[in-house]
Image (cartoon, rainbow, N blue to C red; front, top):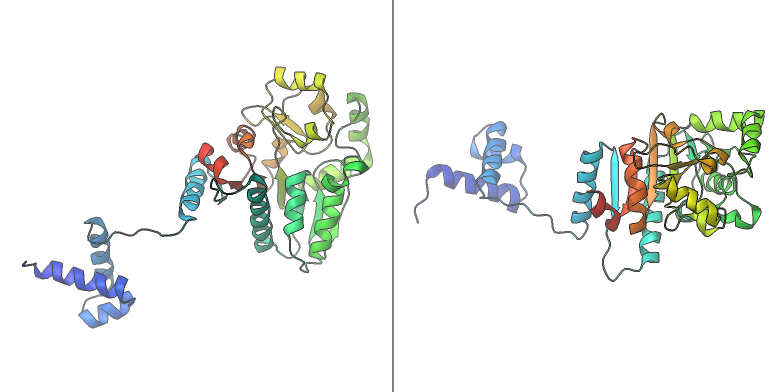
Length: 313
């Protein structure tokens, strides 16, 4: 079959570039053509179907999902952990925690202020965090603490553990995550200790938060902090999720019910003013709770599993 000189030239260029690994500059020199012309011919080869590029990697689909979510919600970064029918939920959760820990390590900078909420996801992430040395980093809690019997999930304990891993400084939040009454919460919020902790929390550079769905399997619910009558309040007031010291609605805004008023710590609205907010989530039930945070611009970085990503994309 006869082919035109232009097509022969195109095939020669694409073969040298894609099959032989030659640079565009070297091809230009060999062919006696300028580098911009080589670049143009390679682009024409793709557009005309002469060259078809496919990425052969099991993670490519997850990366593509992440890019779609980034664009849809105008996020800075979305890391999607691939899942399949063979992977158990605990295995996926551990992988999400490991990836979140790796991402945090890559983002560490001298003198930065890190803020933590609380819960199982953050505890697992810190388990996966390697030891390193950043003595000028400061780690601070974003919410009050939980009871000593649930120390593994407690924000002050998590702050201490992460600071230990980073060889850095830390502060504590000397108040409960959930006050016994609105009156007590009001008194505590006016105290110097809580005011100082809140001010510190609002001015971190990098916040790491877990998100719960109190209608399904929130840590609040699992640890018994929210009773049956309070669950009714949650359902009646349109709550879609919980993060930091907020129960929030479908638009990512704090629902000002009796439970939210008793929570001590920063609210989801405060997250908007923090430069980087990383939300970590795993499991289909988290979709309903993560989406409002994206709508409310409360998050800039997502580390999630493929199940969540498919629902969000």
